[in-house]
Length: 115
Figure 1 (cartoon, rainbow, N blue to C red):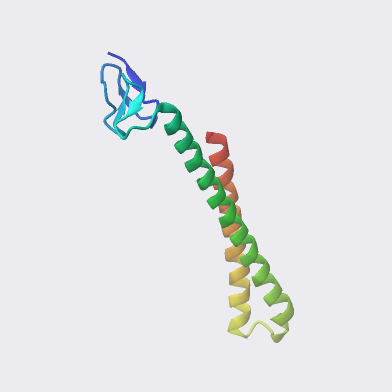
Figure 2 (figure 1 turned 30 degrees about the vertical axis):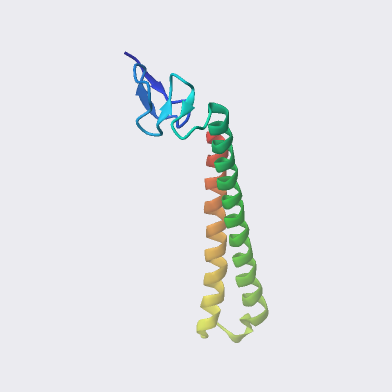
């Protein structure tokens, strides 16, 4: 008995099993119990990867927009001095947006490397 990866969900299963415990993929017939063939499952997985990548790209864009918004507010309205609380809010928005962008870019790069 060997341990193999399920062709549908890539989870580790026994080579002697006929149906995957995780996704109910029928290893003998080459289709899931939901009636999906292996090609349809691959297409479904590809679509899920595309949606995840798009979501990460949109999160990165939101981080850029927050960074620019905070920077523009700080630059044009920041002549009031450091004593105003709004100055720290503007800088906080810019720092938060920049950090969000950088973290999301790292997540996107690791996601691309896994594929």
